[in-house]
Amino acid sequence: MAKRIGILGGSFNPLHMGHLSIAQAAQEKCKLDKVIFVPTYLPPHRKIKRLASAKDRYEMVRLGVKNNSLFEISDFEIKRKGKSFTIDTVIHFEESFPKGTKLFFIVGADNFSELHTWKNIDEILKIVSFIVVNRPGFKIPKKNFKYHVVTMPGMEICASYIRRVITQGQSIKYLVPEAVFRYIKKNRLYKQ
Image (cartoon, rainbow, N blue to C red; front, side):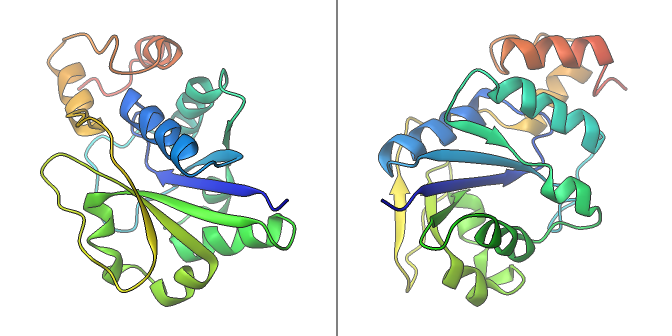
């Protein structure tokens, strides 16, 4: 039977419980054999204040997913360097897995509404199916192609909020996995 592989890309600046919850919900609802987290080297669509190094973001994802046998991490975009475009990533995974593997790209409703701005979106749609996860404050727009919707309780957690909390000297415990919490603290990430 053909494998079903989910791809979850992002800056993961830092990886938080929302990312893990989204991956778990997508894995269960769409019966994915695996979800691969792909930290970007440089996000193509936005500038992020206090972007941790690619090495630090990779390590946080590695620590955050290591205890889930259905989750993996890929350093493909980090090794490529430069801006990370989804088209390059999905082609890489299409070529990495046996023919017949079904690839799914997991996005939040906020990013799903911006697909028209993605480089080579028509080509991406030939390679992957989208899994769209609801996000508070964003409607999932209707599109003229097939996609899967995963609805989960609204989580108002986002990486920019976590960075702001750190800057204000407050705790992020329980917002990120314990190993990620310790890594951020040890390496003094996101301090001003």
